[in-house]
Length: 288
Figure 1 (tube, rainbow, N blue to C red):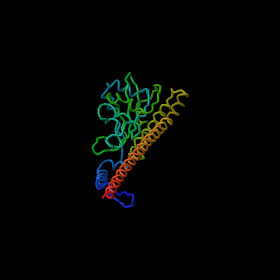
Figure 2 (spheres, rainbow, N blue to C red; figure 1 turned 120 degrees about the vertical axis):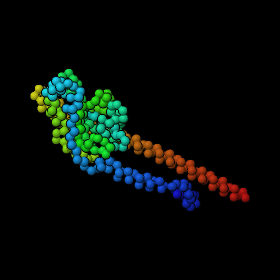
Figure 3 (cartoon, helix red, strand yellow; figure 1 turned 45 degrees about the vertical axis):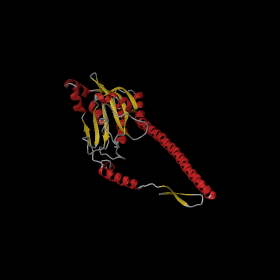
Figure 4 (cartoon, helix red, strand yellow; figure 1 turned 60 degrees about the horizontal axis):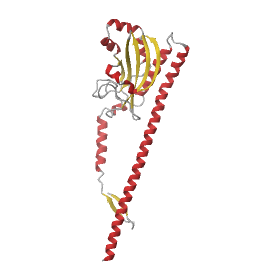
C-alpha cells in the first residue's frame, strides 16, 4: 500500500500495489544463478589449448598443398574482433551464432573478443581464429584457448565484427610459429574477470605482431610499425568501449530523467484529480 498526504496532512491510500511478486522473482533469479553455468564463470576453470588448424587444413586441401602451407605462410592482415553477447552468456564462440556467419557487433553492451589472422599460402587464402572460452555444461567447447580455421559461412559476415585491424604486408612466417603465437605466454585457464576473452585477445594480438616484427625480411620502418600497432590496437579497443559505454549510460540516465518527469506529471494529475473530488464533495456538503 502506498500513502500520500492530503491537504489536511492526513495519510490516505493512493495505490494498492502488491509487491510480493518482486520477492518471488528475486528468489527465483538467485536459484537460477546457482543452478546455471553462469555461476561457474566466477570461479577459475581449468583450461587447455585446443588447436584444430592441422585437421581443418587437411580436410580442406590436398596433402601437397598442406605440406606447402606448413613451410611458409604469408600473413596479410590481423583483425581484432568482437561479437555480441547472446542468451545471457558472457562468453560466446564465434562458431556459435544464430544462423550462418557471426553475430553482428552492436553498439555498447558486453562483447566476446577474438582474434583473426588472414593468411595466404600456395595460392590459398584462409583465416585462423583464436579465442578464449569458458566451459559450459551444454557445450562441447571446453574451457581454454581455441584455435582453428574459419569456415566459409563464418567468413561471410566477418567484416561486421572487426573493431580494429592491421595490414601486415604479406610477411612470411612458418605456420607452426604463427599458431604458437596464438597461445604462447597465455594462461589457458578461464576466469570471467581476470583470464577472459578480452585479456586473451589483447595478448594474442601483441604476440602475432611482435612475431612478424622479428622476421628477417622485415624493414626497419615496418618493424617500428608492428611494434607501435602491438600496443596501440588494444588501447584503441578499450577507448572505444569506454566511449560507447559512456554514451549508453548517458542514454539510460536521460531515459530515467524522462521517466521521472512522466511519473511526476502522473502524480500531479492524480493529486489534482483527488483535490477536485474533495472540493466537489465539500461544495455538496455546504449546499445541504
